[in-house]
Amino acid sequence: MGVYIKVPVNKNYFYFLILLSSIFLFHFPQLNIPLFETTTRPIFHLLIIPFIVFSFLHNKISLYKDVKMKWHLLLLIWVYYSALGYIYHGDIYRIGRYFLSILFAFLFYMVGFNLFFLRERTFLRVSSIILVCISILGIIQGIGILFNEQLLDFINRLREVILAQVLDRERLTLLFSEPSFLASYLLVLYFLSERYVAYRFKFGYLLKFIIVAAAILSLSVYVYIVLSTLLFFKIFCIKSIRKRLIYALLFFCIIGSFIVMDIDRFASLINAQDMSALIRFLYIEALLNMAVDTYLIGAGIGSFGYYFPKFLSGEYIVPGELHQYLNGENLAVPFSLFFQFVGETGMLGASVFLWLVFSGFKKSKYKPYYIAAFISTLSALPWGLPYFWFLIGYLHRLVYEGR
Image 1 (cartoon, one colour):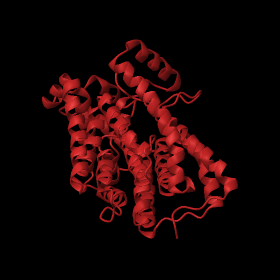
Image 2: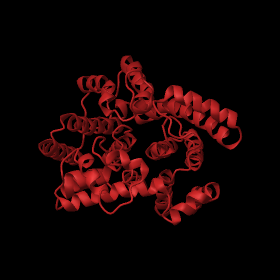
Image 3: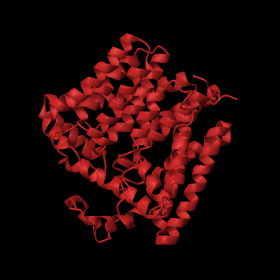
């Protein structure tokens, strides 16, 4: 059985509509929509459900047995630890929100695995329309950053209309509130560019240069780490000397550009004085402590927000940004997908998560993407921006088809 379904001509327009709507669906948490005011609202991804239900009713979806078993086990673990979190804290809203998050993670995984039930060539051609639109926005924003403050101000005013929040006005952010959200998005774009080249689409080569330029202009350490990880491992996975040199050049361009363009930030990182990085490490340390305190069993879904104030009240100088969590009135969310599994579901949940993510790794021709995708989960929580799940689904599809 194949993993794509040949769509009759009279249904093509419906699936094209789904593809063109994907820019909205994947960016929905970031967009400024009346009555929906926050930037973390996976519950409102309900808009994608009619698309998925229609596809379930009109097509037969096939997941190969190995991946299907891992998803069943992961969902079972999620249900168990959701119940455990409710027993400990009685916060049904928080538990329900995270439970919806894992369900939508599966739905976006299925989008990647089935490519909206289109042939891959068709999917890539149609998605190029969306990529061009976002790239044009990024090019205009990049020109404003480098050469024209008035143009940058205009783009930022436009972003304030489009987006629910604008947290950064000086760096490249595209349709996101702040630059670090670009990491998994640019990783997906780079992977799509690889698939474009596989079909000899000239657009794929241009897209690679656009992605590297976007990563440089983001001035985000997190974006640099994810893209640099991808390029570093591609250097060793490619047999062609010419391509190795190209990837090495791109790798050093990203690293060198960061050092040159933001030397103060680089120095603060080296001296462990960068506040943004320190806060992220503080979240990770709290999640690891949470796992140790529960003897690696896990404290239950949604427990991190209740544990974090106790962790901060120890021997730590609490950054001002985190003071809102000290009294327990505001609950922090774990700022790392992988370490959330470690802290809230213990080693069992973390192991199943890794088992699922790296399924087919040995057989895959795209090993660097597996590694970079995993790195993208260490300091981000991609429930509301599910490019990570889409990429993993796409990678698994190619392994299943032996490509």
